[in-house]
Amino acid sequence: MKKVTGLGGVFFKCDDPKGMNEWYVKNLGLPVGQYGTTFDWRHADDPSKIGSTSWCTFPQDTKYFDPSTKPFMVNYRVENLVALVDELRKENVTIIDEIAEYDYGKFLHILDPEGNVIELWEPGDESDPDNVVG
Image (cartoon, rainbow, N blue to C red; front, top):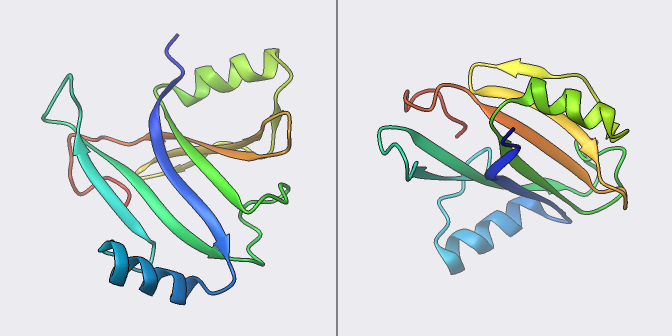
């Protein structure tokens, strides 16, 4: 079973998310919006499918990374979240929540052995450019 298929996003806490976003816009040219930046790309094996990778700042007091106390979270793209969750349970991986479903995909959060929260994302229909994160 294919598990992680790519990087879905990088999220990090900062003291001044607005100021940090402005710095990245000014100095690195990231087109930052309300939900950070989304980098769109096409699948190598099927260029009709559009994929995306997100980058986003969060305030220091965000609860979104809980129960991790780390200042970052990585989102990994997966092919079949339901099957992967079954495998993770068999391996006694700490699963933080239940699968949440949206138009743009399914999400679940787990912890690695050092307490880093990991967001797993099974994208929705990536052949539809209006149905991706961003």
